Structures are given as C-alpha cells and as structure tokens.
Length: 68
Image (cartoon, rainbow, N blue to C red; front, side, top):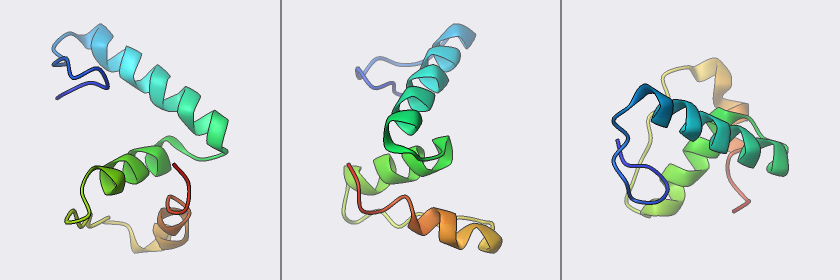
C-alpha cells in the first residue's frame, strides 16, 4: 500500500498513522473515514469507478462527492 507521501506502508504502525491521518481529514470535512477514502480514490483518476458493496450505504457514498 502506498501512503500519502508516496512511501510504501509496510509496518503495522504505518497503517495506524494512515488511519490517524484519514480520521483527521474526516473530522475536518465532517465526513466518515470511508467517505474520505472514496473521495480520495475518485480524485486520483477520473477513469476510476469504485464499486461499493453495500447498497444500503449509497447515500453515504454520494456524500463523499463534492468536496476536496
């Protein structure tokens, strides 16, 4: 997995740091960590089509759009 700085996440502590970063971004935008991750994925490439598995979360997934 590649981190925000472009470094490869290899240690368990790297994942904790990434989750802390995602949580801080989520709080700043009033979003969930999942919405931050989905927003990031969509912002990376306009040809990316995420396929979320939970249809009951469609409204929350749509809330991931419209902010950067």
